[in-house]
Length: 129
Image 1 (tube, rainbow, N blue to C red):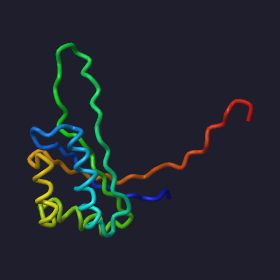
Image 2 (spheres, one colour):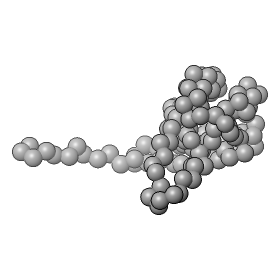
Image 3 (spheres, one colour):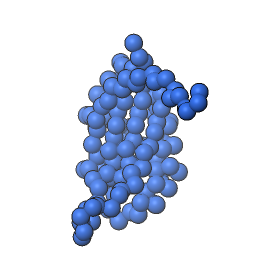
Image 4 (spheres, helix red, strand yellow):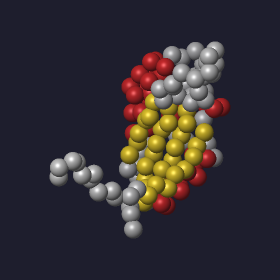
């Protein structure tokens, strides 16, 4: 059976009035380092900054509901479920909450879980091999 990875996905929106550039700089320079302090049991801590594509309909300029998808990866299901339980109740360390209030519109934060199972694919053959 393929290896299982348990993930928490967090969809986050920057606070009003903050530019995307300032948001990314602060997240990487400050907030991610705070998150790393509390990452016991986390296999990977990944930030995926969303680059919106222009809407195909003329004149439609809606902003996306989130600016980054943060991923927390776990090998251990029990640790994954424990972290999810605390996060879903808003029981985060005070330092994390205080910094989130500087960076995010917390009313728009959304959590989802993923159990990822990846297939091991063979390397495609090139012509002539």
